[in-house]
Image (cartoon, rainbow, N blue to C red; front, side, top):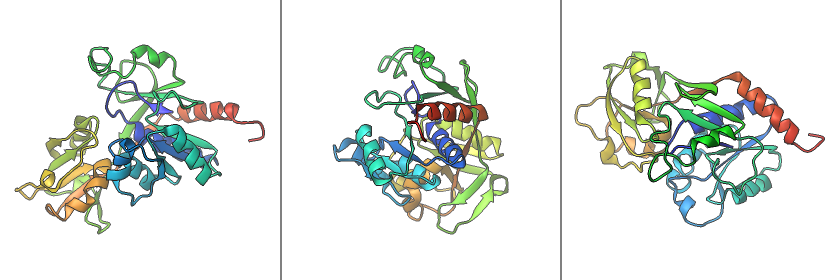
Length: 284
């Protein structure tokens, strides 16, 4: 169970990708379950469904499409994540471990290992939503199996950072380039994620001069959001790119996404596997 106690993104999805890659490398057969936040299915009351790399993010959510594109395992979504877990297992009986993206507060669902991700934003005023940014009190961190710190944090936990410097074209050409080779260096940076400034700082660390355009997390982009009159390149997150591919040709040329991957303290993987093996039925 990967989640956080603050509202907004803290790096959960990249961590989920790291976990399933780690487990696959050890011979496990993971599946991923998500609510599909931002997609119409999540609030429709309809049953769970599987997600493919070409699924409509407006239906199933942007993060599940990203997970399906980047992982080599089944991805299912549903507002009722217990039902989604059962549906995934029915469709893929080979799966022997389920990884939940953002399910820490979904208490109906049994869990064998809990991970809370925290980032440099901290815990704000320490109050629960709506008086503050917290989903649960900070003391909840004392109950989880592991805390993962995405960047500097006031709490102790396994270190995680994001790396990535290769830009990929959204135009369908398959073109890639190192961010350092992009000319001119001044770019429009588009981010509809939990912490847009984190993405902008990442681009600046690659030597780009950023004109920032921050949107709400899971923003439903329209072509006018991406129309700029100066002809500069547009660089966006991979999560936003799954929603903007169809808009790229309607706006202007020079659209790029920056895929990133989580680099995590390797001790976390060993701890997860040890706990899972102890939790599995005898004979696994």
